[in-house]
Image (cartoon, rainbow, N blue to C red; front, side, top):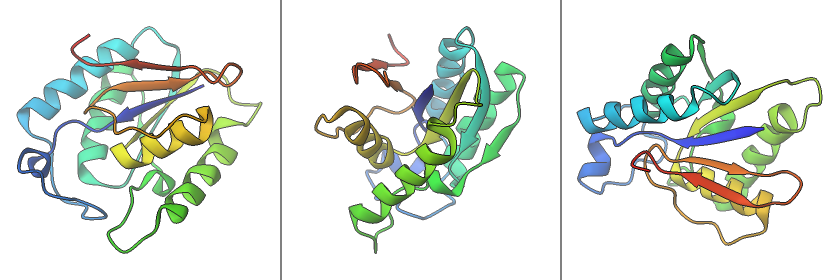
Length: 158
């Protein structure tokens, strides 16, 4: 199963600045704390792989999670968020390619953590559940049951 995690709070999230494909905005101290809390929530869920968008904020989040789980984070370009010059259909194509590669492969065992961005996760949840896409909170963990299409969200404060 894919466990979708939105990156922790970034320096640009604080000032409500659109990040798009801008790779460099790092996590804030709060963002690092959120990632550590998400890692604790993931510690008992049988995670076998941690994948991350190439953006620094996502990679930092994935590294914190992977370190806690005793794993290595791997960069996966398909998890990149909506670029300022792209249409939603481009992101949906990346999500479908990601699902084809990681989410639907019967040979995968355990859970895969996909650290990505609010818009990407919202669109993925919409695609998988048929529900209206919503922007998840920083470091929330979102799971869509592949059989029932029920969405479960764990917030780092929960």
